[in-house]
Image (cartoon, rainbow, N blue to C red; front, side):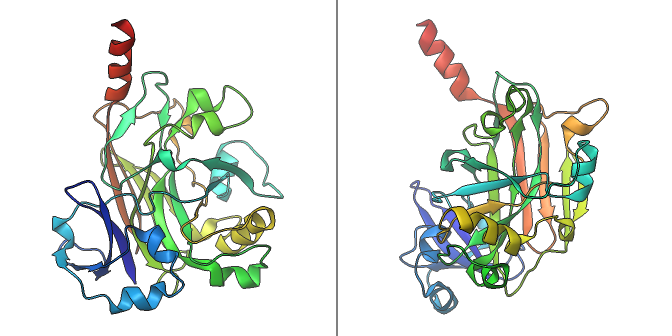
Length: 291
């Protein structure tokens, strides 16, 4: 099953089921009473409810998609989780996952513009597979963890590298507003499992290409590990890390600039396509301060 969050013209959102593989002509069926995918997952009978929906019909190519789960309780991210990326960053394979967190305000839609902050010109891409939690879990084993996974989606953990490496803690380079596109759809775990290819392009040029089966710590291991510390709730997101090919690791380094278009695709899950634009909010704040 493929689920999306629609952005309505009045600024509200709705959840819908996509009948197909995510092509523009696929039918989109609204699921009444669910404002977004996270709200739907909070209903213990979400699978049956989504499958039975027969609400307002649309065409995927005619709708605007919002970020998949606009208000997750937790966004937990993994650093250095692909073997190739660990090696290109000059590090040893870790014994335990490297974790950091994001806030809900970092999330944005799969087609939304990416604001480039004037405070950091080292704007980098990180295409990632995302685990979406569908059932509350705490201290689950790896064998049990699969039952808590609703499915998978795609993210771009856009990073402000100068700020990220000001200190040994990464958070300040990872939590800028509207910097993390997520979507386009949740594909349920009964239809998709890690293994297919992840590709990131910038202006059509391939930058990252890796099988999602190269994860050092897989989805079940991550769910088990994180749930040891905190209860994971329906709609929580686990970003599983990025493969090799990030801009900072290139020689010379390559970063995103205004006008660039970055796309992250995972076979079977879909594609994020985002254009980098000047951060208008920064300009407005500066003008207000000057006044």
